[in-house]
Amino acid sequence: MPVLGNNKPTLLAQVDKQPSIDLQKLIQLINTYEDLKVDDFKGHVSDYLFGQLREAWRNPQELEAWNRIQEAPRSNPQEVQEVQRMISGYLQTFPDSPKIDEAQQLMEQMRREIVGLREKQDWDNLDKGNYSQMAEYMHKYPQSVHLDELEEKMWEQTKIVMTAPNLNRYLNDWPSGLHAAEANKAIAGIDEWEEIKHYNEEDKIFRVDDFKDNNPGSPFIHEAKSLYYRLRDEELKKMKANPSEFSKDYVEKILAANIFSQYELIDEGLMTDQSWETLHCDRDLFPNIQDYQVEDPNIQAAPGCTDIYLFGTPGTGKTCLLMGLSGANGTMDELGQSYTINTKLQGGPYASALLQYVQAGITPGRTYGKFVTTINGLVTQAGRRGKMIEHKINLVEMSGEEFALRIADNREVSLSDMGTGATNLLRNDNRKVFFIIVDASKEMVKVDYIEQVKDADGNIVDERIRKKYINQMIILDKFVSLFELPENQKIMQKVDAIHFIVTKADTLGDPSVRKEKARDLLLDKYQGPVQKLKIYCNRTRRINLTTHYRPQVYTFSLGRFYLGDVFDFDKRETMSIIETIREVTGGEKEKTWLDSLKKFLG
Image (cartoon, rainbow, N blue to C red; front, side, top):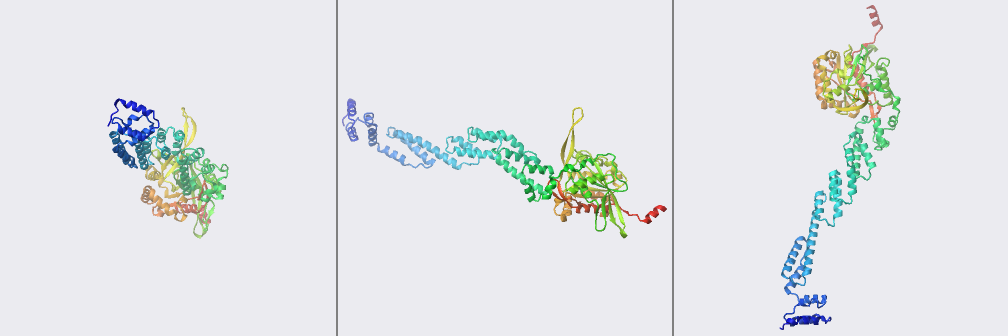
């Protein structure tokens, strides 16, 4: 086969002059001269013709290898990696291949494909409820087609627990994200929301209600609404359990906030049309009860009577019990037995003031101070031959505020702490009966007291109402323990009976089961002081003689309570207390003309 040698440029120049030269002519020239190659024609013929020439003159082995690459499957990362390996071998084996550029481009395409397949596989396996995993995915695939969806899901996770660290984490990952402005606003308001969530239970529902109304676009709005409706359900449940705990001011506040409407409360049985009218009566027209609960160190009780003491901490219902006893004033049963309060003697104006509240069907609210008050009364009993037996009594209310506060502060207590003048009153010559008041509605009782604020010179510049919560069991135990102290024995020798009255008995359900439930309550929650009192009475062989030295339990409620310190008076349990007083107090037979004659004759 001839060789062109130095004549090759001349031949190629002639090719340049023949623009219409065809593929077959070029193939013929290559087959004619030994030193004429395909690449020699590059630049001397069109690119299209040159490509045809190279394709026609391809190595069969290279062509086979290239076809295998083209036909290889690449539907998963493993298959794509195999194609990459084939291309790499092809590039090394056939560096002069006419497909060398295409092979290199295909190698880059395979790299992108394997990244895409791995990303798809990672996306399918991604836990889209795990913020950390999603953040890792986002940083691994910053150009992912799923970025918008990913950000939404990461924001959803952020909102589940909306805290400053979580919000800042989101902003670090998405500084210019779709919810960046919302996140920054949430951080600004997070202190307010956290404060509301940890607000005291009494006012929390109002704060949450204000927040949801004033911040409709807040990221916390769904959490606020959820908390609001939960608090509302809880409030309704507490109202039904003990409506007497909800004062007029509180009910008006909750109605003004539209948390409940009048008709909702009526439908729930917490109000009636009548109680609604009573709720809005002008209470400024009624006497101020505290004007009658005076702190008098020299307080006296009418002599020749049995003093009926009502012992209990503030808020347990002593004043309500006195209201019931005042409301029953003038009652006479079918046997002609009666009960009256002497409104002209000491305590009479107090009883009259309480009676006004009973007749209106409202309670006067909580009172403060270290007072002891007395009300003189008379209980009659039908005796033989129609003669009446009189039981002269003094009802004695003792505040117990100082007693409870001293216990709360772990200080020593005495009977004198039951109220100003308590010691002198207890030491009088009258016979005595103790009723220990227990609140059925709660174990911890709230004691409101007035704290005086003084300046640097000790001058009182302000007064504010404070409160403490004290366990009733501790108070009862301390009180019963005082009976055995040597300094109280002269007092205790004049005590004929000691019994329990469980107040707010309407919270115990139907009247037919209240006494049994009250007994169970005392034995379950206050067994210690109850057993201690039983042992003490039995040891005296005198106190509670008519009940075999056992303290009895009685229940008391003013009647059916509605919201706002409103009630329908029901005197049945009051009359039961009066009957008990009749049984445990000594009586004097009504004087006849013969008695008067005997007294005259000496």
